[in-house]
Length: 394
Image 1 (spheres, helix red, strand yellow):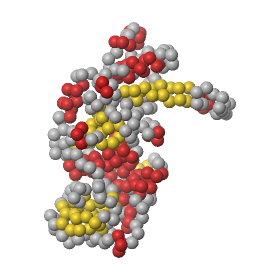
Image 2 (cartoon, one colour):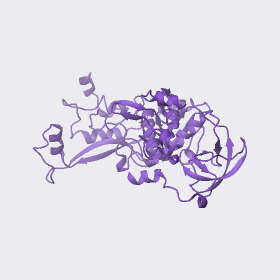
Image 3 (cartoon, rainbow, N blue to C red):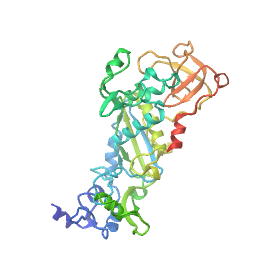
Image 4 (tube, rainbow, N blue to C red):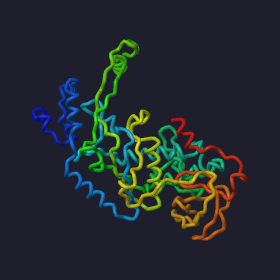
């Protein structure tokens, strides 16, 4: 089979997925020679998406018709490189749609990114403490805490909101949680994260890929390190630079995010995911600016239920309306004018009925608002928002 593929001319290639994998002009070592690589990658980057892909995309998009389904178009603010570690004839992997060869961000990558983002940004300062031992100010953040490990043992399950969004496995301390009347045990996440697919026509001439170069400046040292001979060769300024060309997704390409599940949870997941994609990015080389993704202009957005992020800030006085608790536990939940839910931590909520409005202050901004009945002047200075600190650390 490999001998037959070698007879195929590059000009006959029309599917990037095959061209980057099965039809790559590899030699005996399984890599594309450096002399052949530039022309091969340039040809792949010049391939246009098949016109038939548009029909498949529209059929996929039209399948999201349930009340909780959410579609959101987003735009690459920079290059995108997902699947960097995949085996590749170009030495740098790239995840593409197997059938159509278009850019794709796997749903598992989106879910993993968001799970890490929620725990790191909104979780408690000390994740080793169980929820009942957290300081009063940290009790709400414990809802976004991920699982806790003790060596290779799963010691403690995640917090309530983390569990609802992503699911939970069984843990050693489930019995303690049961005694305290807290959620525990294995459970399935309520949100399904679908693959994000390329929006046809969003790239110039429907060519979504571009060649990029990563230059290695210490190749002899790295080769010695891989061969466990690092003591023999030291890094120096005398080594020749070794440019490695590979494919990436072009900036300004648009993707369509898709989430399924109960409306109240997909709305929260969408808002958090947009935040994570914009601030952290997805895929490889995010520290170099790759993978940053921002919401597309409204005129290009195709969504079942498009929402914006929280628009109010800490210390603002707003009018909220009491609504039914979406978790079904009968807790006091309040909806702000921007549609984001809020609740009170460490104080009694206002004694109003469902449907009644009341003026309060925003104590903290997160996936939901933390509200207070006291103004900032009477409440005194609060601690800085954890999200801002995390961003400065990155």
